[in-house]
Image 1 (tube, rainbow, N blue to C red):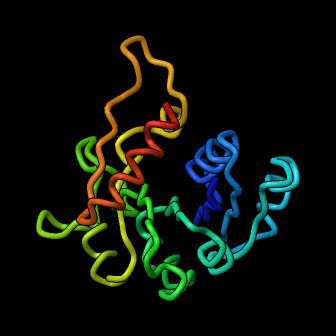
Image 2: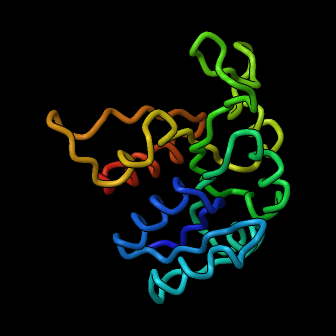
Length: 174
């Protein structure tokens, strides 16, 4: 079993944290305001705790970035480059702009020439980023129940060993 650091206090962070706990992993969820995760940690059992982004990143053997895309760089800065070094970071973020949809289409703060994960990988080159979970809503991330079976989960990253580790996570979540 692994120690998983989940960076994020929202719904995606909760769903994935609970999924890892159900599989027997230890989870520390990080937040700018760790106190808002105290009730989650006390209710989730002995293998769950909360802390700052830096504490979660330092404690985790595997990390999950589960924040708004606009906050991703700031959160990773707060986690600290040293805590990210050599670790697989599952990037669940999407680069959705903080602006209303235009003609019913979401706007992004990235361009066609640079994805958010490419930006993160350049900024934190010693982390091993793998994009996953970003193509489905949180209700379909852990043990999804669909008539045709689980959804196809797209993933990408430039480190084959990191992709293999994330592939195992995806398989364990059904």
